[in-house]
Length: 263
Image (cartoon, rainbow, N blue to C red):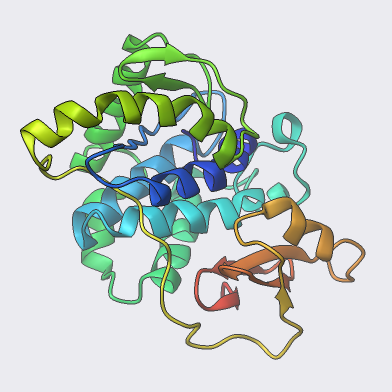
């Protein structure tokens, strides 16, 4: 998966629902970050993910991934990704991009300190987060991957479209889980299998503007369509499952909070 890849962003809702559907002893869903070199800020955003999880724990990964997806247009390549707001970062230096990522990270995680951030994010490498990001890239290359999203199922390369729904995934995985049931019952519960969790809690605060209630959460296209034609360069922010608002160009989408100015 890649944080600045529109296809990875499209694939994420179905994968999240898939992880929520199965028990930990039935399915282990693992995301490996693959920052492709021809996307300008991909390495920095991946490096930030390792920095944040090292400081705040693995539970922070999902929220950071969703935050980057919600603000993807601020960091993606303009020509390759056809995204309108990327002019905000395309002319910035690596140090300036790291500074913008820091602001976004601390808006998302108020407990993240300057020291914790700077331990992993120098803007020029030489940190443990930098090393972990390099290893993640090398590992993915060693598995024959060349783009995102790409999948392996039980270690075997598996082709699936980025827009697969949870039902399409279940059509493939349900028979495998069912076939594995007898052995699981004999062996007992598996240890420490990773499983994604739904966001919980209510938004702490949000700007005084209309809040849209979506039919189903996690459908980024639905939220985006709701903001089409809104003045001021608005873009969709699904800040809480099933709720969205339209952010202006100078604002970031902060999960549980909504549109927040990056000042």
